[in-house]
Length: 402
Ligand SMILES: Nc1ncnc2c1ncn2[C@@H]1O[C@H](COP(=O)(O)OP(=O)(O)OP(=O)(O)O)[C@@H](O)[C@H]1O
Ligand SMILES: [Mg+2]
Figure (tube, rainbow, N blue to C red):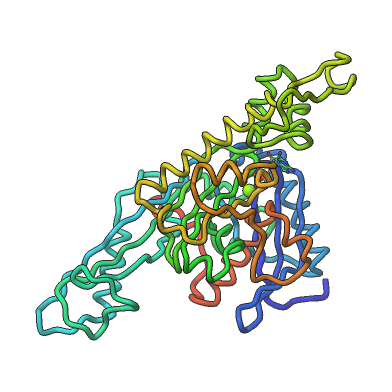
């Protein structure tokens, strides 16, 4: 393969599809997408690997597609992770300044930040990301860092995202078995926000929700800080499952009905209307299903999911601060009426997300289901640009196994 320039690769091992994004960044940090490869996913459920052999084959296929498009050979990548084991929460670390006449040093700030990381996690969990929210000196938020100021107490407020280290390791091992190095595992939700929010959206505060096949991630970003994040192991597969149960049809047909005739709200136009199922679908000719019933089933599940997220965000009154509104990505953001449903629940403007501030194939960038993989690559670029550090190693993921 001809090109050997430094490239950024993001890989999402999703429930419905495996997606690899390859891009490059110029010296101004502008990102160009060079290729997107995807393969149908067979070994993943609810965002987690359940059949490693199948998942590995799918990863190989997706990477192969992306390599061909981008004309590069992938040697290392940033790997997206999700699943119900991943959790985000806010924490604060404090460090006292030795005496009233001593100026605050960079070390005081670093000590406060380290104390914020010193938290008790479940034994089998490891920290994926610690994102600084703000630094305060004696309770007053300081624009940058309080270095050189007088004060008694430095406080670092951070958002910590952690997950089960063995499950993260399982995803990493699958990629490493293909002789590809994993630079760092990245929480999918964080990646989505990097792909779909403009710098202005971030400044204004935005809630990004990615509804995939088996998992839904959400992240509330304000400036460079993450204020809230999380995962629910609910996605489009659950919607299809509800349709299959509610209409007493097989799951394949339910999936087709969802895509061809689905909606997230029950509108007046669906009342009294029905869809005829083909003879081959059930062996039952003339079987009809009510469109209103189909939409009611879909709406109930999607409403439940969005309300769970609204509840998590309202704990900290975050929705009042989402001046840029809500951004929906993932395959389920295609469902007609999902923006209307989300507007009702969040009482905020809702945007169906596309990838922003990225150049490349514009058709691809418009697909909300590619946002995660593209965002992972973008996040990788940001990490390398801002903080070139030693490569992520299993030792870092599994400190307790040392
Ligand atoms: N046009 C559409 N209308 C309705 N649903 C759709 C449409 N396109 C895709 N979906 C649904 O989106 C889901 C797949 O989304 P996506 O590709 O984002 O999932 P994934 O990233 O593989 O999964 P996950 O992130 O949950 O592990 C499936 O449930 C699929 O049925
Ligand atoms: Mg996904």
